[in-house]
Figure: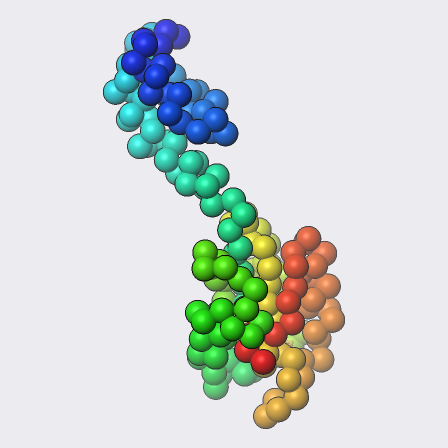
Length: 170
Ligand code: SF4
């Protein structure tokens, strides 16, 4: 496959970490078109279609992505406002996160003994989950008892290599 000079210059603008993938995607599209020379338009089209996503994803590396697990029983009386408020203001258990951190999951344990947690954490692994917070309602002895399954839930998450933080808004 030939690359004309302009196309060559254009592909050099693609960050090095995705350039190999970008070249392959562009060449595949050109070949499919029945041609054997890549033009600058081909590179631009490929960039919009296949590459910008990868660039964005690579640029996102290092971003902190958090999930919050909370008590199924308590969820019947709590919409989660205190957890979100603490996160949005980067306070209490979220004080260490920078402004780019994001919540990518917020779900209940599924009821005693927390059967849903492992499956849902698995689903988030491919989205670069970095930490799971166990909500304060699971920790505190208040209107509801402290979760008796904390250790098992925590172990099931940590066994996947994900950091567990105990608490959200206390
Ligand atoms: S396992 Fe713990 S967090 Fe889940 S419903 Fe039971 S007490 Fe609540």
